Image 1 (cartoon, rainbow, N blue to C red):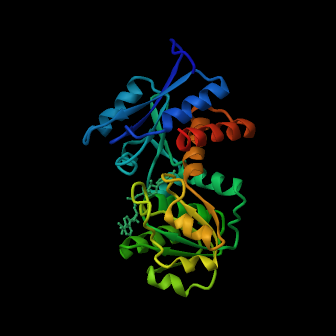
Image 2: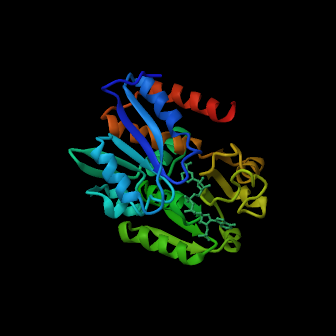
Image 3: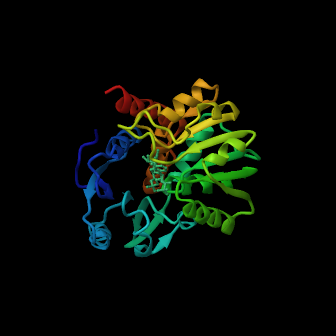
Length: 288
Ligand code: NDP
């Protein structure tokens, strides 16, 4: 751990609640590995105090913040500059303050992208399906569109939200996007990637899955879950049992932090450091 002194860069998470966050662990790990004098702390921000928190962060010359639930959307109008990805997704998870100005980014797309690519997932021309239409789904559909998938299905309990997401994608990309129901999933012949972005299966509800009939996975090549707690959801267990490759959400979480770290500190973290740090983070999360 770096020792704190007069030159320490201060960063932190803005959200409510923040007590569960693992970001301080990741950023301490990366700062130490990169030899950067920085500290990352959780900031609990009460409802109605978001603007004051951003102003305060700027006034205190913080280097940056992550933003989490429930402020990822609310923070947008408070910022001076918003990145293209964050605009498309309609949510910001990373802030950087430069010369009194606030810059907003969304590094969830980068996190999911790196996690998928490092595991050998190919997007180009593939048929993909996204279960869910919340925040994680937005980052997933934008990534899939940017990576030039061939065909996209969106499935969500509240179908209006799925149609909104379809409109968002088609506003920015020329892509074949279809909204279907969970029942209609059975009629798809083959799926290259099925992304699970709902909160179904999250600890402690580890015995439920949005896919009720596990034989569905016979036609799925890759099953990717945004959830990382538990490490293997029922969605992933069923997929694996039916021969699909599986990937949980830990990599997405880790690599969004890598991207945020690189933005804040203007560095590129070498692959070898990323690999060792991910292994340490994995051990911290699953072998404590
Ligand atoms: P949101 O609240 O924005 O969206 C939740 C989604 O889950 C909605 O599509 C909602 O459907 C669906 N859903 C919830 N309960 C049910 C249910 N009982 N039946 C059917 N659908 C349901 O959450 P997020 O998108 O922010 O997060 C979703 C998951 O992704 C969480 O588990 C979170 O931990 C994980 N996540 C992981 C990240 C990572 O880095 N690995 C990053 C962000 C999120 P409806 O619209 O009908 O309500």
